[in-house]
Image 1: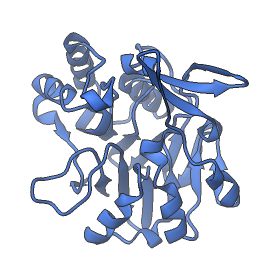
Image 2: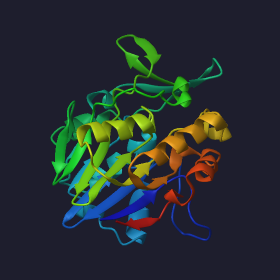
Image 3: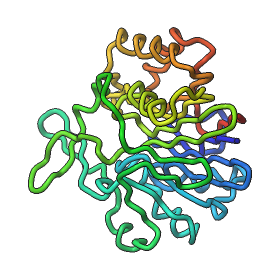
Image 4: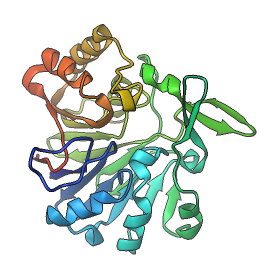
Length: 281
């Protein structure tokens, strides 16, 4: 399996790749081409071309949740790739907002027109679903541990009310291999520890070869503000180290301040997964 960060918040120095505050990951596994999230603008398409990855060959696509930094590039991808089905949670086509300072309210949802234009290719799921060989989307995540504190800035529309986001539009992906499983999360709004628990609940006694994704330690992205305390981040890192996880690759909403704290606790078992990075498992 080869996993590539098509776009993420940062990129290597002197790179001609684009970066943005979003996430898109490509997975090549034997004959399976899988796309997980599509970033903010569709610039991941340009990066894929520069990295030699043919997005027209993608067989299946999953969008982790209904926020624009993970599904904003979906329209451009759908125009380019004319066959890949796209899997989301039903609430992904609702209204989602970022609210702060009593006056700031920003729409952070997906383009609703896509759900009409590509109704024959978009699948809304509410249960464990196998989307490719040994590749599963998990929709049920326990709340054994607290959800990220940064979630307090995120809201969704229910009926005629705007209420705190319950992240019922979030899903995670697990790929099973002979020697273990690989977990993919977009922002881990349910909390990364809860998502690991969900994977182990579904596939008990299974070694975790790798965990990819953001952990949403960020609070106010434009200030690079970390919502979690230093103690909480270090505690999460210590707990992650107790699970049967071989390697952790994180970035995006983990934040530039959050990642070093994880690194201090987890050492060589965690790496930043930046734009253009490729991992072979």
